[in-house]
Amino acid sequence: MKRSGIGLFVAAGALAVARWLFEFSDIQYYDPESIVDYSGVVLQTAAGVATGVALLVLWRAPPVQRGAFLIGAGGVAAITQGLGNLFEDALGWEWAEWGFFIGGMGMLITLALAGILVLTVRSPMRWSGLFLLLGSTGAMLGYGLLVMGVTWIGFSVWIHRHVGEKPATVG
Image (cartoon, rainbow, N blue to C red; front, side, top):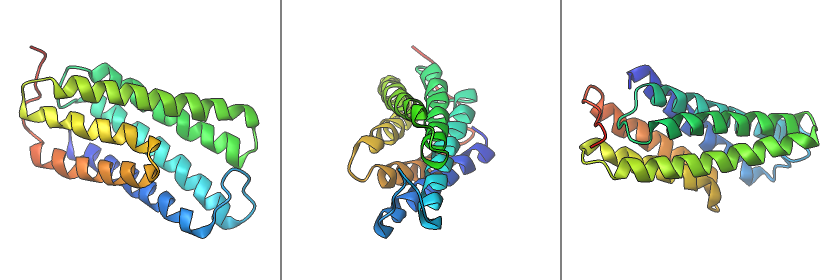
C-alpha cells in the first residue's frame, strides 16, 4: 500500500471520531433540523465513504492476498452505507435506509471474514486482519464510531511501519 492510501485511513478514522463526538450534542441525525444535526449526517456519510475508498485502495495492494476480494467488497459496502445515510437522513428518502442497512451489514460481514482469513496467513502482515476485524465489529458496539475511528487510525500507523514489505501470499 502506498503512503497516499494510508492517509485515507487517517481521514476515515478522524471523520468517524468527529462524528462520534457529535453524540454529546444531543444530535438528531435521523430527522435533522439544525446545522449541528446536518453536520452529523454529513460526517457520518463522509466517514462511510472515506472508509470505503480507503478499503478499495487497500484492496488494490493488500497486505495479504488471502481474503483480498472481501476487502474490496467491504469498500463497496461502506460507500453504500455512507450514501444510504445521506439519502435517508439528509434528503428524507426513507427507502434509502435499506442502502444504509445493507451497506453496514455488508461491511460488517465482509471485513470480519477478511480479517479472519488474513489472520490465518503465516506472515507478519497477518496482523492486518486484527484491524479489519476490529474495524468491522466497531460499528456493532456501543461506541462504534469511536472504535472504528481509532482502529482505522491505528491501522494507518501500523501499515505505515510496514510499507514496502512484501505482501504475504496464500499458502
